[in-house]
Every structure is written in C-alpha cells, then in structure tokens.
Image (cartoon, rainbow, N blue to C red; front, side):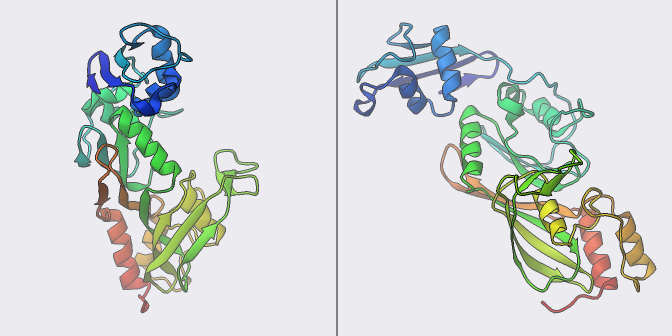
Length: 324
C-alpha cells in the first residue's frame, strides 16, 4: 500500500485460497485492513477499487488468484487549517506521532476554539493528517492536562490504535496530586456519564459507560497525596471524576475540585500554591502500545512539567512528607 501525500492512494493484492468465495468487500477489508469497510465499499462503488481491472459490486464473489487494484483519490477528512506553532515531538515515523502536550492547549477545534489547537499544529507539521478522521486524533487529553499522547499518521495506524484502545491494551499512566492523605492504593470502578443537571460536566452515574481507574501512592504528605494513576478505560475527565467521587479531587481542578481548601495550619507558601495552582495537577507520563505496522512494543515517558515539580517541592517542604 502506498499513498501519494498529494492526491492518490494506491495498492494491489491477490485473492488467496482462504478468501475464495468471499464477497468482494469482505475480501477487500481483509487485504486492506488499514481502511474501514465503509470506505472500501465507497471505493468499490466509485470503481476506484477494481477486481481484475474491472468494476464489480461489493456483494460479488471473488476467486483465488484474482487481483484487487486500488487507485483512489484522496479527499480531506477534515477542513481544519494547519499552523506553525511548535510541537514537542517525542517520537515519529510514517505511521505514528507521539507528542508531549503543554498545558492550555486544546486538542482539536471545537466551539470556542476554532484554531490554535494541537491538531492545527499537527496538520501544519504533517499535512497528510488532513486525510485522516479528526486529523489523526484517536484519544485526547483535557486542555489543562499535560503530557504524552499518540496521533495516527496513516490509515493503518488509525485503525490499529482505535482497536488497541477499544481492547484496553494501551497502557496509560498519569502522575497526579490530590487532596487528602490516602492510606494505600486501590481502584475506582464506577460508570461515568454526563452530569444530570450540568451538561458541561461528567459524573459517576448509573446510566454512564463503564470506567475503571487504578491508582497507587507515589508520595505521601500530611494533607495531600501524589499518585501514579493507570487508566483501564478512557472516559472523558475519568481520573478527575473518579478521584473527586472519593472526596480526593485533584489540586487545582477548576471543575471537580471545588474551592481551594488549604490546611488550617498551612504556612503562606503552601497556602499560596494551593490557592493559585492554575490547572488540575495531572500529567500523562507514560504511554505504551503495539506499533501498528511492526507489532513492536513501544513505550514512551515524558518528564513532569515545571509547575508540577514546583507543586511537589512545596508539598515536600511545607506539607511534611510521610514515610511510604
């Protein structure tokens, strides 16, 4: 399979004996797994995916030895523009981009954020992302959550990464700092859905989607806890909602944390950082997945950002660390 980054996608494949007697669209889905079945059916209908050089119907049966030939025009899947804002690229190849997202960056355009998003910068850097759904974005980080995320750069990667996320085989580990002195690690298994009355928020709700979060203690303080959090599922605001449901919201969370509540005996420096920390204390630190093309195990880690390190330093100095 090859793709001209300007205007064409081409490829050829032969029908094996295992696919003999299959429908044309079923065989195409097996031979060209990087594309969705609906897209392949569209190309079959347009006559740009042919059987032995001739147009055929999606339901037609194929025979061993027949040749599938693809020569399809590339159409932009999104109409978002690119920009020249710099990216912190952790890793890249022809299939995957791994980036370290800064705080304050929205992942893709939405109401109120028509441009200046991560995906605008990604398209500016790699224009071929226009040809992928959502510009290659297959998972997101909240605007003020920092850290590592991957982006599909090819149709093969787009299909593979979505399947890996659905199968819960992608490992995502976050650093977090929450209110309260936790005594040990654990898990939160509670469904998450839209808040019943505040539609811009999420909540633990009986009618929500299954959501599972695992956490362990990274560092203890008198009134706060640094955590290593592992996602089993990936619901919107999952870590923030699950920890808030335990009455251990993230420091700085403007949506789920309520008003800042420094300890009564907190000195001025501790009070100051707890009242003014500008975002939820959450950083996507580790990401591991199977490479879509090679099957190789890939694992990447990003360092804690400066504001997070400063928060930990103040807690160590002014919210006395406890033995682990």
